[in-house]
Length: 304
Image: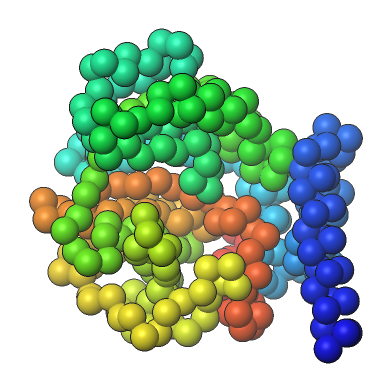
């Protein structure tokens, strides 16, 4: 029992040290050394860059060696909308309510009672704020958090280089809602070279955040991440628009070694969420660990 407690304390200490290193990112100019350090602290094992096997390892490799300049406009929350619209059509885009360079420029009075406001340079849900009732919105608090998010640097802290040249701005868009008991579902399609390989469904996102994993044929997958466990007792019904969702994901992921394509499904149809090249920045632990290896086997690095 004492041994287990000691191991847990050491793992927590490693996580704390990793967080400190990310705060002091400017002390680590070399991307390769930095990623090896953070990977070891977060994952508890060495990063194999010469012959990566696991999904988490290949994401680090892709950060270093797959630097297509097109990726920058694909992660920018503003330019991504234009890019996706040009690829699959405007009807899949969530309507924009406003774009501003500074928090001070936001025209709060013009925004509806319900809206979403976020920064263009955010990742992993950072810098996103959902307003369901503007009459009770603490504008001062949200403004402070938006200012903080504008100054965040995902490139430096996680070496996600596509964010390096993203201009920090603010965008407001319509708030999507669902009448389903599990709320609005976020369908995250993991794609390798234009082919969907699995779908992670996030639901109950505003109450008790949950996830389930499925194959493209909508077969439940038991593999999951430790911090985001799957719930086998809650099965998500196969969406009627699954074929369309997979088809659009193929278009958006064509000729890309790996990218996650996110969609929402509403009564009026699909709505694009975002494109993510490094889920969890490649520092998420899988359960079982073999699931990390399985997903990694789908990514072909030989063509880069």
